[in-house]
Image 1: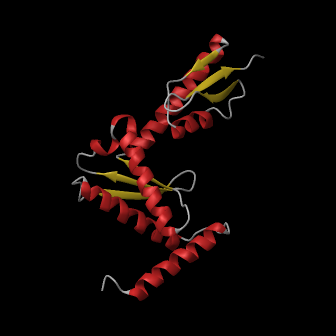
Image 2 (image 1 turned 60 degrees about the vertical axis):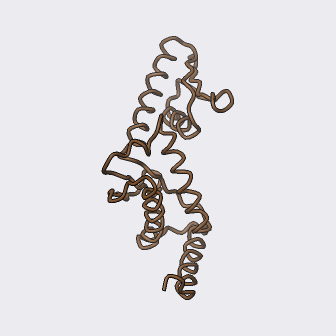
Image 3 (image 1 turned 90 degrees about the horizontal axis):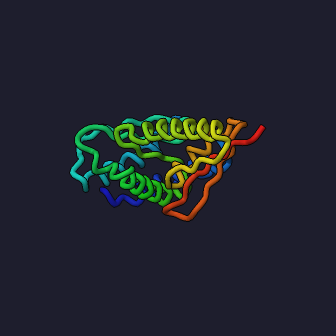
Length: 185
């Protein structure tokens, strides 16, 4: 019964109703988010099976910005993170693309592995504060190492409330980086 057309229509209607409410700016219910989470977890588990990472735990929770976070835990998952998180970034992109294609709208779903993104976010906030302090102390500019767009955004956001510095990005990918400049009083 995997090819039951009435089931496919019901699922499509459910996604269409979700899309309409989301695009109107209505707050999605817990049941709506559960539907989205079930789809996302299904895709993540399917991809993990190609890595032989079956039987892992996937924790679901809401992030600070209203996104659905899926944190994969258990087993040896370092291969999913990759060097500097590049494999995890690619994994994220695949899941986001699959979700948008299935739901027909973009709902923010973040895939994390063993809290790597959370730890990296905290580390980047620390780097931003430290570089800002150095820029203020030296009354100059501080250039950070190249980062992907997501990490650069975290740096900018970490310093948005600091009235003593400004931030901007320079360069072209893959060497694009953040420059933190002290404002003179």
